[in-house]
Length: 466
Ligand code: BES
Ligand code: MN
Ligand code: MN
Image 1 (cartoon, rainbow, N blue to C red):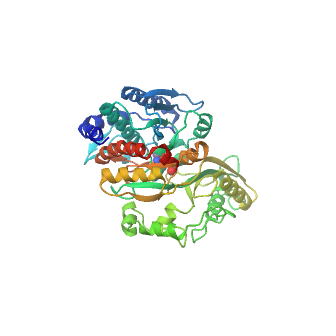
Image 2: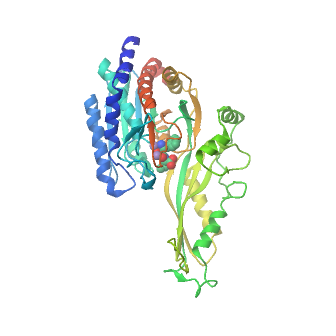
Image 3: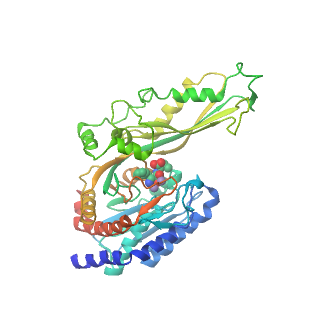
């Protein structure tokens, strides 16, 4: 395999410039899943993928999803007896506001200092694109892949993948594989490669507090009626103590405690807390008492307000008692917390502590389960070998604070081990203005993926089954 492998890898190097031009075209499509006005763009991004996959030589299918964006499916099944990989990525992107903080329009990519800047460059179109190019390089130089491959590209990941679990369950048969691979995560720091072994889950809810049908004059009525905004602020403040511990009864019941090994692994990561805080730009750090920063963001659950609004928020003053007040609150979850149970605990507690005289409603907006995979799975080891061969150093193993709900679904619905192999530094500005992808990571990543498929072929189906 050695000789042909070199040619696939040098193909990736030789075609570097064309690959970047092509990525530019993909990034130009404003495929924002959260905004209905962009439904046509989402469809264009899906069509872009279908055309590209077909040109490379894969069998493709655009699968409509009732009430949402289509699933893009493609496969290459020419390696009977070899492992089958189910690769997942998403072609939708986050909204772009605040627009004025972008150096360039978010859907007009620009290459600067070895980086390509655009919404989706890192999360996740850039990484999806790397996988397509790895397959192109392998098929162009060998006319075959070392493994069987199924591609699933989703168009509503940034809108909490509402339809994906049902689709996976309904398509269990056709999605049969030996391992699931996702490239929608990143490195630990800078350009140090990493394999993500844990993701937090999420429970996302909205609280609505309603007092009167319309805003009231705060002089005429103030002092005599309850204020929804004040009440909401108090409700939220009560959900967490000054020690950062969440006060919802039974919230921590299912939290798997960090073992001595877990804590040693966090402590062993090369992490300079002051430099990190300075890089983030915060004035200080805060979190649950008794845990380090890395433990807090990778191994412990949280509760955070994502947005809050009530009454008059324009310039100057307007004297009213707001008719209603609202907050969006999310909890990041760790094994073995169940988002449905956490929502029930959250809702019941908020309703229990709400004062009388106001209507309080709590509704669930999104949910995803946490994951944690052993670092010694043969598929993870193979990924580590591929990273070490291409990046020249072994990867770190990290627990990520973000969430990819489909990761848990691959394990629970399809029964697959999941490898999270991402290629972007944490400072990539995902979800923020000026998102970027390092172009040397893009190129090395393509070679890593090609190499990984070779490594998995060497492990074989029996080796993957353990
Ligand atoms: N790619 C991210 C998840 C991620 C973030 C992985 C950072 C590793 C490091 C994904 O696109 C994302 O944004 N997920 C959402 C999930 C939510 C919409 C259910 C998240 O984490 O907020
Ligand atoms: Mn993503
Ligand atoms: Mn994202």
